[in-house]
Image (tube, rainbow, N blue to C red):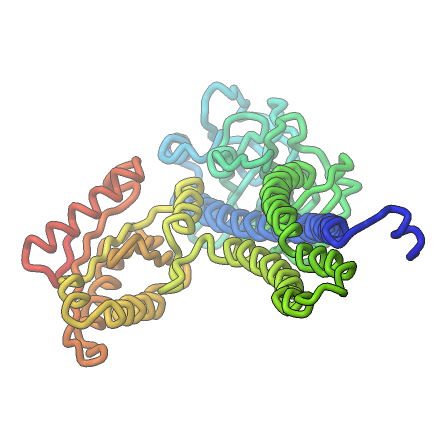
Length: 521
């Protein structure tokens, strides 16, 4: 090895440069491998979590709609049971129920002999004199109870699902059933509930029934198809809520979140192709790699410049070795600083710099959506939940909260006391509002709460509790701290989210102009 080094005629400067190149290259390669794993794993976990939360929100919303539909049918069944032989009553009730909410594509009222006594719309042209033996009618009459059918082909060649309620007269004698149908391959309620703008990186949603058949799918040709060769299906049926990495029936790897709709025994699945997500990861990795490469290149440039200065003491000593016979050589050698400790310090600094850079990336990824002082969501985190609420059409209230005379507190007691007040208010907000409410620090002493309610009294009472709690607390002997709060509702006040925020802000200023320490809505 020594002979090779001698043959290459390497001096100290070249050794430093070669060592630096090898070290930086290895560190760069290892960093890329680590980042590749961390970024992809983090994106996958985030996608699974987002899909699970989204599927859960949609399942809850859909379940509420189906419960409403069954209640409407139950009400009509009770009404019809009082005078089932009255054909004018049955026809008017079918027409009312069909047109009242437009939740059903068609309405059928069937007697126990399987004859359709009334129906809507009239364009179905069904006969009231013959018995029908479709799956929906037959099974509804057989169950004589609340019934939700699997997909089946109706007499009019529509792929449908029927929701039915039994009709009993006042003596508890079974008379027949009233059923509402949903046409799976046409515009229907399920499409309105599930068709949203949530389409990030080819994400999509579908619904399967208890027989593993597709009820809803973005591809209409797959509606009614039985799911097979899906390695995550058994897990979803067994767990009913959660997330999973799966291979679907077409051999495509997906990241799926799923949730159960109890009222209809259906499962909502929100999933994203893994390949699409990893494309995003590769793009992120490329950008990070360029940044790391530039950083390492800058370090190498410094080493290249410093290597001459670092090697100069040894060069001086080497030259002096041939001048030992000169009288002043000892003094000249004493004047040479060898710099060995500085070389070691530089190598340590390089490692520390790399470690610090990795910590910065991890810290940025961890805290990108939260406010570091209060622990509440920042604007970026709030916007993620805000988009989900709008997508699922979940009504919510916007509470704009501002601390009264906060500048005076900072000026009189200092910013440290101001920070304590901000953290105390954040703590009160977390304990005062529900888990599903989103608490955010909007900036400075301004806070926002997104409450999933459309009831003004619920929003006002929650705001009033927070106001009183803050007013009654004495934080570090600063004195009572009061709040001004403005409230607006989406979509009650406006379908434009920005307009609702502006309304809440205007209500906040109205509260301040009215004397502060109050709520306006």
